[in-house]
Amino acid sequence: MTQNRHPSVDRLLAAIRKSGEFPAMAKTVGLMETIYRALGVGKTRVFFLLKDPSASVARFRFGFGQSAGEMKPWFEIPIRGAEDLFSLSFTHQKDIVIKDATAAEVVRALPDWFTSRGVPDRYMVLLPLVVDQKSVGLFYVDGEKAGLAALTPAVLNYLEVLRGQAILAIRQKPGRASGRR
Image (cartoon, rainbow, N blue to C red; front, side):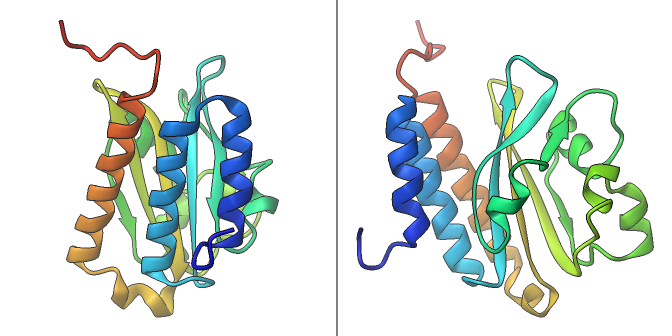
């Protein structure tokens, strides 16, 4: 284990090596760790969801932060037929920043699968990953509202840059056509 690396990174990298998706996913794990550290270790959660090609759902692949392991079995986004903030961010390829997840107008727009477990008193950021004009995944970031001041326009821009790096890593996945001739 690298001294400065979060302990779960080594476990994630080992699992990814076994899956055969090492280059793209390893880079994504590194980017997620950067986001997690930038926004406050222990105060934020960063999850990566990837579209399941066999179902109309984006599934939790891995994450950092409190309760990440507990949330994995139920944290998935229906892609079709839903009109909640998660599904709309994914299908319409729109970034969404929510400063107060407990605000009445926000709670009404959150999906039942999320609100049934209690709405966290946190801020949330939804960043879809779009490759070749198709949504393939989503970064979910949330944090304690006390840390909302850290979510400046510059930090949001930084998150967009990191997302761009993840998209580049996905595009460079071995066996994937580059789109160039």
